[in-house]
Image (cartoon, rainbow, N blue to C red; front, side):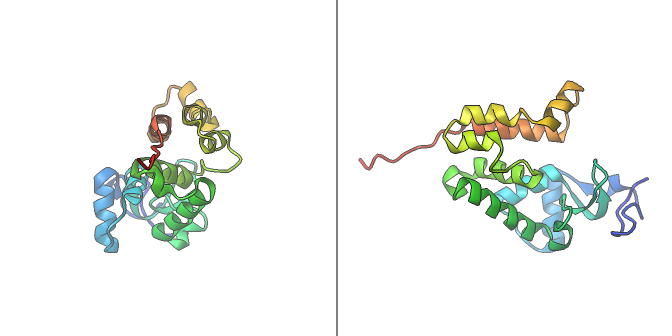
Length: 178
């Protein structure tokens, strides 16, 4: 049975199911172990990615650590990886604070998944103010479409659907100065 282990042997040790946390339990465990207070966007990613205090293989078989950290982020850690993703989002969308915590959290979690690239059609629609079109285009996603056609409802489909809903409901407010 899989378990947390080392980079060389991610399957070593106890059952992974006993060491993986989701939702608020993942946030609490991460904050307890690392003695930090996560921001709302960091909590959003932690809740949906889950937290494993060790190495494991993700559903695609990739070596992963902690809160879905793969590749260069295994060594950098979650907080540094989060900052990189936030910078990427702000490069593409501008200062996300203006969008509110809900939408900014969704954009950052999409970047964390690898779904935010300037070349993506949904990003172009978003940046031109077509939020409804962006929301629909986000779900025109190869992985999402494959899972849905198979009848699979999982954390990937759910998080893309939530992000799509939040994007589609976004309506900027403008101050008139009156």
